[in-house]
Amino acid sequence: MRRRSSKRRVRLVELAHARSGDKGDTANVGLIALKPAYYPILVKLVTAARVARHFKGMITGPVERFELPNLRALNFLLHGALDGGGTISLKTDAQGKVFSTALLRLEVELPR
Amino acid sequence: MTPERGPGAVRIAAGQGFWGDWLEAPYRQVTGGPVDYLMMDYLAEVTMSILQKQKSRDPSLGYAKDFVPLMERILPIVAERGIKITANAGGVNPRACAQAVAEVARRLKLGGKLRIGVVTGDDLLGRLDGLLARGHELRNLDTGRPLSDVRDRVVAANAYLGAWPVVDALRRGADIVITGRVTDTGLTLAPMIHAFEWPADAWDLLAAGTVAGHTIECGAQCSGGNCLVDWERIPDLANVGYPIVAARPDGTFEVTKHPGTGGRISVAGVTEQLVYEMGDPAAYITPDCIADFTTIRLEQAGKDRVRVSGVRGRPATDKLKVSVAYFYGHKAVGTLVYGWPDAYKKARAADRVLRQRLADLGLAFEAIHTEFVGADATHGRLALEDVVVDDLPEVQLRIGVRSPDKPAVERFTREIAPLILNGPPSVTGFAGGRPKPEEIVAYWPALLDKSMVEPCVELVEV
Image 1: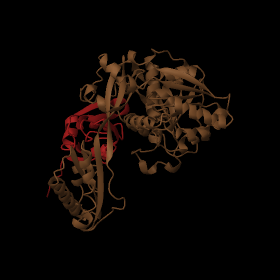
Image 2: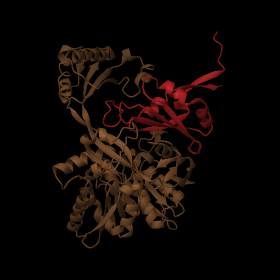
Image 3: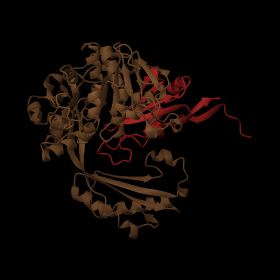
Image 4: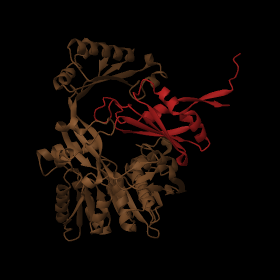
């Protein structure tokens, strides 16, 4: 019998909601905790490095993270995410509108 | 609940979040309950180049043309109720826009009853060479390159003006202020500065008004539209109420909407809008101030009512942002739809065939970009990890190319349709015909010393 793991994996969509937009070739994703108690979890687990790994191959530049504890939100800048951005981009999502939900696919491990 | 006037409060209603937004929204905002100002944002980066092109063909154009019939519809109401309007619908020709609105007003027998303020001075196109010659390099904020790299391809150049020229127009009695490239936030901040006589160095207050502007500048995006949280239970989006800021002299404000409208104003929804297009939240830079979004406090003050307080700000910088539009090249995007069985596999095979043909033709592209709509177009490989692609009922192949070489892009557009008969099977969806090559006008963000830009305010009596 498989041993019950001491951790459970959840997708961010269970912990947060999000909205994304663009500035040139950079997409921003604002990640907002669904409950106040989730914010410290997001701060701890959803690091810039973790998000960069999640989007590996989909963005060409670095990931920056900013904290907004007052709004229980993190803001991520995904540089080089939009194939040049704006009018240059050939992507359906040239304005990065659905990078928000792409981030919500990320799985994190929570203690049971 | 109707937005309360309260002691000294000013109600600013958002009517357009972008050029092309819901035509009913401004009408509903001025008829659905009491408001003091109607704010309408029309200008995105790419808009200025489209308008500059229209003006070069006809010097009487170059503004958001549909602003004029909209004004025709609402002017009798706003004149009667004393509602003032701030709008950057003037594009690259605010004077012509103001004249067109004045003509409409006269036709509506509003002569002598309205004063239109016109804000210009943002348009740098005719001054570029002088600025460059004087050592203003207008380096690209993203790449660091000087504007001289693309000078011969520039089609529009505008400085972002802030709230103060709009305030000037309001102080001189304008009922409608029509501007060129004024920031979205400035259109909301200006009525507050005017009504509350905020001083130019009241950085916390200016930052609060800027946050108010950011909150409502995308229209319904803060009142239930495009809102992810609890989206299925947001009521009556068909009848969505656009947001209204009820601002107070102390810099606190409430975000609300007219009674009986759909949508929802919640802390979660307003938060989504606050983080939209956000950079460093501690330094939201506008011509008027630097707002610190990490100081914003939100609370649900009632149904469809969010109270905003605590906003702190810092002094404005001595620069203005400049948006330059320049010709970049050409692009085209073609699509075909593949059906079950093996829809995804067939679409992928078609992509390989097409790419080989483009290579065999010796066509050079700066980029070829393929997406499989229904599988990976929005979430890339993250989506493919989660779906059994073999079972998909249909997949749209969407392939785009970009090149400085227009003939190469045109040749590409001839290579899509043949795939219907000479490529993988079960393909349809070509009713739209051959894709059209598009000119790419790209955006070049830069900074310029504030002292180089002189906003100009004129009044047109109706």
